Structure formats: structure tokens, C-alpha cells
Image 1 (cartoon, rainbow, N blue to C red):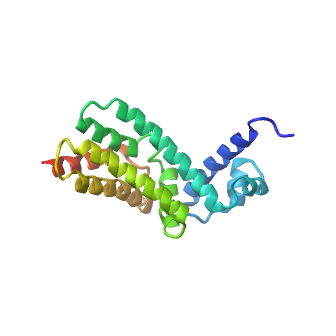
Image 2: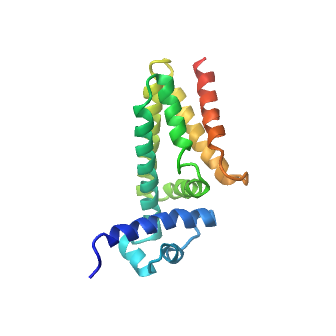
Amino acid sequence: MPRTGMMAIRKDALVNATISEIGRKGSHDVTVGQIAKAAGVSSALAHHYFGSKDDLLLAAMRAILAEFGAEARLQLAGALTPKDRLAAIARTSFGGRNFNPEVVSAWLTFYVMAQRDTQAARLLRVYQQRLVSNLTHALRPLTADAPRIAQTAAALIDGLYIRHALADAGPPNAEEAVLRVMDYLEVALA
């Protein structure tokens, strides 16, 4: 009989291994067997818990987005002004675990998956809508053009992830990425 809590531990290990293996391979070419081996479980158990490699990637992206959401709420709680809110969103987008090579590779794989998978497309739309909504909310007191500027800032954030994933430029530079977003917002608000 399995010990209480082992299923959650194994699922977390599989999610983390999915992110790690996609980051190591740099693509969706990783197999469930490779992910399971990295997680220290059998391939059959991975299939039992998640069903398919796509389901594993969706679970990994949900975990990444949950971590992102928790960090965003924490950063936004300390933001006193609209510009503080914008900076908090930018810092969250590129801070913590969000902008490391493994997570960037997972995002790129997720973008591709969203073109063919309805669940992935829906999850991506939810993320994008929340990002634009948070940016728009912060921009509204500063400009009448808040929705357009928010859309462009969100595209810049996604673009920096894609650019890093496709470039062989070493580890991501979160500080530089935040500065680029903040520089754009300053110019757009001027």
C-alpha cells in the first residue's frame, strides 16, 4: 500500500523533471521515459499520473504559472503607485525561477504546443489576458492609451522570452530584461 502523500511527491518530481528535461534538450523531443527516469519513477507511473507527454507539459506550465501568480501577488501587494505596479509586473515576469534557461525552454515548447492543443491554447490565453489586464490596470491612471501600451508591453515580455530561447546568449539577464520593459513603458508614457 502506498504511503500517504507519495502521489503528490511523485507528481511534483515529474513536473520538475519535465521542466528540467525540456530545458536540457531544448525542445519537446524529450520522452516520457526520459522524464520518468529523471524523476526517479517508472514510465508506467508517469503515464498513470498524467496520461501523456502533453499532459505532463501542461502540468509543468500550470506549476510555472502558479508560481508566477504567487510571486505577482506578492510583488503587487507592496506596490504603492501605478509605476510601482508596472515595475512589480516586470520584475515578476523575469524574476525568481521564471527567467531561467529551463523555464524559458518550457515556455517556448508551450508556445508551440498551444498552436495545436486546445488546452494549451486556453492556458496561454488566460496567462496573456491576465498579464495584459494587470498592465492595463497599472497604466490606466497614467494614460488614456493604457490598453494599447499594455498589449505592446506584454508582447515585449513574451518576445524577450522567445528571443532568449532562440539565442545562444548564455544565461538570461533578468535585470536587463526588466530595464528593457521599463524603458519601453517610460517612452510610451512620455
